[in-house]
Length: 67
Image (cartoon, rainbow, N blue to C red; front, side):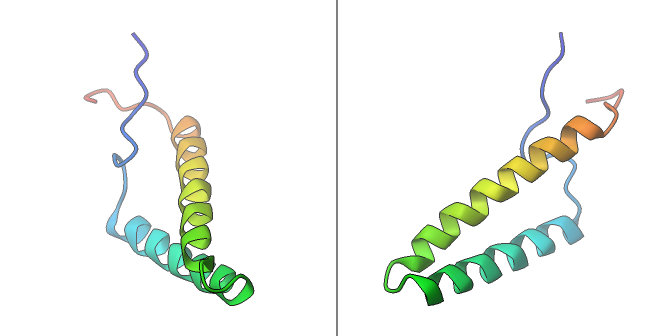
């Protein structure tokens, strides 16, 4: 049975750092554009984009034998 990997699997510390920086930058930019609730909108946008990128990256990586 072909099982999709967990959203948090196969992430290195560098991936976590880049995800946090990306979320912070998007949140700050959207907050500057749409105050006072732009931080929440920016956070939702950033998390959605990170989810799409992670899902696409997982499809491109070959499956591991032990997972």
